[in-house]
Structures are given as structure tokens and as C-alpha cells.
Image (cartoon, rainbow, N blue to C red; front, side, top):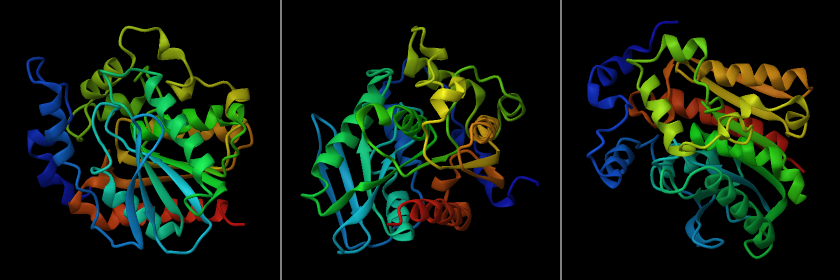
Length: 307
């Protein structure tokens, strides 16, 4: 399929391409600019949206599609290369996910790189998950029906959380990842084919990994780079949904990971979104495609969260 024509004017502007920022630009300025460029689909009204003081310094924003008690829970981890993104950048995505799944969505404000490196983001996600399980009754939620969802780097964190959740006696119903980051090697064919000109550049992705891992030896750690996980590590995962974009350097990572999961008997729903680039859920020109993708993910999760 060709690149969606609605994206061509957006991609024609070099400012809309994710590359390493100049070294002299303060990280906060980089974050402000990046966050402002992630509006997401149209905002929908829900029964309740509020920000919770979670464990430690971790805030969560809770989205309830209805006032009904005992709603299942989707814990959401935002993307942004572990470097930017926050509760606001993914607010509209979380609203749509709650509306379309019928579940409460709890979005996590984890610490960012490079100030916090791996495994800090994973630790924050797990702390939020444990807190949510413990507080589910107080929040009138069902702590026995929980799914994880994340886009891009958030998908990476969600996947790592799912691989270790069993160690904390947490039974997850589903894992959903949207154009996830899964391989620190950055060596797939799609990494080479779409390295420049398709929003997320190869140089930008390598910079994200450097911010996340620093000079550590964690590149081969499956909790940082899930594509390196062994069959035994993958066999503990719940049913998985993966959405990829055709013109995305991360496309092959998600699709190869799906193949690995199928080899160990994990139920996988894999959907490639033709004509799309990385981050299309946050791009207004293709809002219809974004909402359709969220609806598909929401439907998968809803089935897994049924009583």
C-alpha cells in the first residue's frame, strides 16, 4: 500500500520528524515541543476523569466510561521514547480507549529518561499496578480483571511488566501494544527501509535507546529489549494484541515478536495498519484510522476482561 496521502503534507515539514535534538537545547524545551505535537483523536466526555496520587511520586489519571461499580481496569503506559509524553499527551487516546472498551483506564505518569534510566520506568509501572490492585476496592473497580496497554515506548514498558507480573502474584488478562519498541539492536529491515522521512527516524530511535539505557549493558536484557526474551519468559504472557504501522521503523519488531509469541502458544492478534507511520494515533490528519485502531484494541481487551 502507498503512504496515506493525508500524511504527505505533514511529513513534508522537516519539523515533524523525530531526530536527536541539538545538544545545547535543554531537555525541558525539547519535551514541551514534542508534547505539543501529540494532540491525539477528538476528546470525548466520560462519566469521570480524575488524577490520583498513586504510590510515591507517581500520579495516575483515571478514566471511567460509566458510573457503574466494579469496572475492569486497563493500565495505560504512554509513549514518547521514554523521554517525553505525559498524562496530557495521551489524554484523548485514553478517553477513547475507555469509551470503546467499557473499562476504566488508569494512565501512569512514570519518570522519564535520561534523568531516570532503565529499569526506573518499569519499576514505576509495577508500583502503579500494585497500588491499583490494592486500591481497586476503594475506587469501586474490579482488581481481578486488569489489562495492560501502551503505545511505542509505553508498549515496551507494558510488555516488560507483563513478563514479570507473575512474580508479584498479579494475574493479567491482556497485553495490548501499539507500534511497540521491542529491540535495542535497531537492526530490522524496516529500521533500514524507513530510517528517514517517516516521522520516527532511525537516528531518533537510537537516541531514545541511549537516553533509556545510557552506557549500561542492558541492551540484551529482555525486560529492556523484549525481542530478546526466551520462550520460557514469553510463555507467561496473557493474550496479546499488537498494532503496527506499515511505514514505521518499528514495524518488523512488533511483527517478529508476534511470531515468537505464536511459537510458544500465546494467543496473538496482529494488525498492520497500511499507509500509516509511527505515532499515527496522535496525528489529526488520520483520526479516522486512529479511532478504528483504538476500537480494535479496545475490542480485544474487552473480550479478555469479560467475567
